[in-house]
Image 1 (cartoon, rainbow, N blue to C red):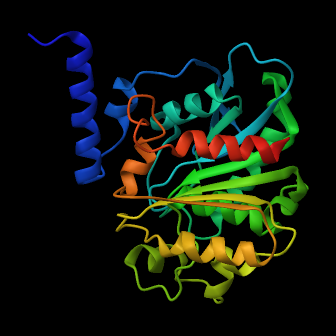
Image 2 (cartoon, rainbow, N blue to C red):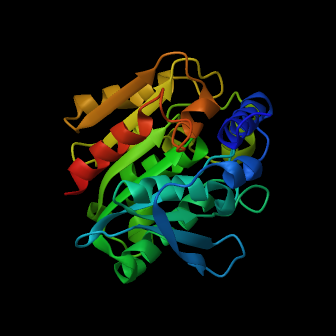
Length: 289
């Protein structure tokens, strides 16, 4: 019989393989994955009236002084996902010194663009108003996300209209981190993009690329060069435009890494070969201070 630790490792590897092969729900992985040393300090807090306008909060253990605040948005093509399956991401970021908010947001078919951005802005407002209760510094907020969630995080950081409409000064966001995100995908050839963004009268205005200025927040942009879901050219194009505007950018391309693997590399058991968590949190911490 295999030792328990080995058996658990194999089970996690099987769960990861299933996710990679079929993009199946993260529930099994979230349950089995060893947890980083951090604490869930709030569950299901409402930031709006709807059932999907809820968030969870994770905090570092033994933090000295007020910690920077990270708001994380998960992916799922803007039509799936739930915060409960991303607690391991919240704990991972919290273990690196961030009071971390993991927010649900409304998805298709309830809403299309820009409804999820409006929800994201309200989640950031909640973080500004309440993070101090959990040891966070509301004047030092960073936004992060994977895939569709990376779009949400980066778009909120670059296009200040949504935060302003929510009553948040966009300058409160000190940096953004996008992991395997779509930032430059017009025309809308993909069925997902057509469904979510196709009703807009101004397609270019839906793209983060359109809002780069010299005052944009610092950006950590990461992708795997084997990603065939969201092509690495999205990261390359946005990083180039930000760099040309004089914005601090860290651009990372991980060899042989695909769309799901780069996400799973944030987890405690699977981060050894892809240093995205350490590189991302080092960058965000440097620019939040």
